[in-house]
Image 1 (cartoon, rainbow, N blue to C red):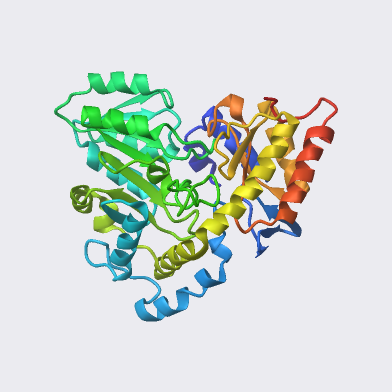
Image 2 (spheres, one colour; image 1 turned 90 degrees about the vertical axis):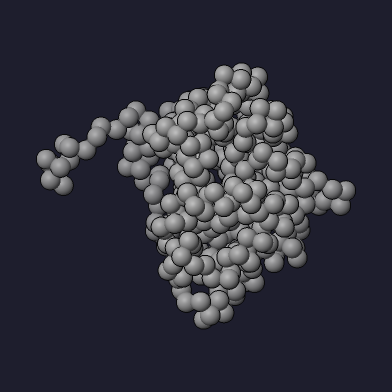
Length: 419
């Protein structure tokens, strides 16, 4: 690269430098050459994928895969209107189906959750509004809040899950301006969700709007009922229904790119909020829409969910419980208190991240590494993600690898943080 251009690049922060080191060590940014079920090939090395967020395994489901051709023949590969200009009938049909599943008054779909946060949060806060941001909310929510602040909103952070601090900040916020409380549903590292019932009640008391990102929970956790097949609940209709809530003063953001393996995101909200967002959100007004293939697989995924989603979730819970039980038997600390198929394993020393990451890859376990600042320094480690497309045999091999890591990785003892 031209040295003059290189010298003009901004210096990396300490946290970014840590990410760069993982990249340069070949532990990130892999090129996947081939897949076979949940087996993946990087170069000549086959591994089992425990980094996928396709929780229901619909990316590999023949019924979902077969749905694409008919819709492409009808609508072409890409409906290149902006949503405001025109939408294929697939869009409103999908929004109606999602609203029914979620038990929501209405739904608006856009391509990605990141687009939603960057456009909906500023649109809902306005120039004089106040945003209260949970300190552990996903980085994309934070980015949306930063953009809202640049447009005139006030942003204040509160300790994650701290209801009393959030209440005090709401009392201080001008009551004649919009107020938002922004937080995760199922957290992307811990797998846990907040006391949504308490935060919803707090927001209703103060006339504020609770803005929840349940990217991970959508499709996995759902309404509780006597005939549920696992502790995840039934139907996979996300955290609001899982906690027995309603959509009064709640905006729920979620995606189909994880459990439903389709490029699509949504906002579940009141019709008046949907109308406001249609008029104010740049992705709805100006951006290209979701490809036809993703609209088709989203519809097919909803069909599969209705027909056999709870059976898939029961298998997913079984696999996840096996991993959590093994870690518990080792006395290893994991913040996962929910049984969600997303298991963060902190290391006793952040400096062990690269050697542990390399060892896991070498032994065929493809996991997500979690460096600082993506997680706090005392939670640096790796994340295991299970999907319904994983098999018991693959989990057997993972447990053997975790046993090796715990007992034989180093003479200094297990690299995993003890409970």
